[in-house]
Length: 473
Image 1 (cartoon, helix red, strand yellow):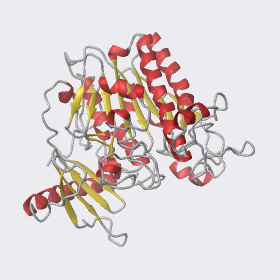
Image 2: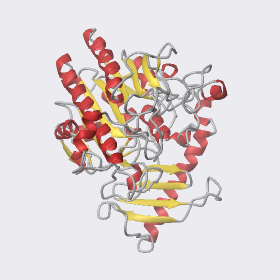
Image 3: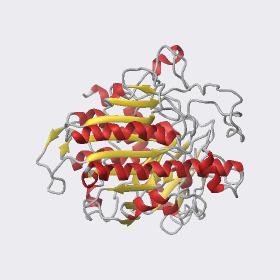
Image 4: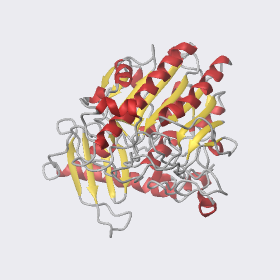
């Protein structure tokens, strides 16, 4: 089995008639937003009118996957097209984006794009000298890897999470179930925003954090548009990662719910407003027709279904699980005039962003570095009837191999060796998306074939992780 396109030095081939110009690219991602936390996926509790409007104009994925069930690995997949086990970001707050990796920002800069990162980074520390966030400062120097070191020319970035309201202040209780109580005095949260010069940002950091992020992203896009320069913009919201805090105008919308839900739902609605603002601004700039906007989440909802308001809908599992609720997330791609609105059951994953974008701009590859994503351009053109190649997952003793219809899933013991394949279950995701019926005994040959494919892919990831991809460049 072939494990992906290959990548190193890009060269133009004749641009496809499908895209006469280089489109602007905006990748929007939420943090811990569940599959069922948006109106377009059936939520009755959370108001997301702007995302619902976007969904009507987008290709909506019934089966869009985050590459991992936690934050950092998924983020790495978005900008490399590779599974994070290929370069050592196995979980949240582990590893960092290595200098040998090639990111979308680095590659698009070579093709005249202006590049910017806004929001949560979580792919390395942002300062060597000051204590910051989870790992920043002298003790985390080994993991210093900033957006600007990975191809982003303009940055407004945090290492990791911040409160979703007044992001620089620590709510009372912090990550307990009472984090929404305001602090008795202004206590710093401990995570800062940093710019592309490595300086701490101190202005305009009050109120809704999604608005704070969009206040930086929109001027960046506007400046590029005024110069008629294509832009690649990442907007990675912190919403609705803990600590979730919403302003009073948003909690009032959900006054009939308990406090946790008021703030959780409220911060999502506040974020939804910023998605609407983004789409309005793109139209005002006159670039909406030539801008691809993608929206997704980095994994499923936090907590347990019986005590947390985030929803995975009808799916089993939540954040940290490779069951569907942990990795299947809301997924939209809007590109007016180029992507026909509608729903698709063809599976896609965050690793698909890179090969898709390179295909759109007519860039081809010339090296043996494996990618795990596939180009979705044929899907946009109405030529893709199925994905045709499974998507591999691995995280903390869990593995999964997901094809167009069937999925195998296994969860091993913490005592197992990392390369051991745990006992596997087989699910028919077309007829059983909630993964209630294990078909392993009914279809043993299918299970055997898929398990062999999974193990071949895992061996490829281990080879990459050893540094083999870099030695050939």
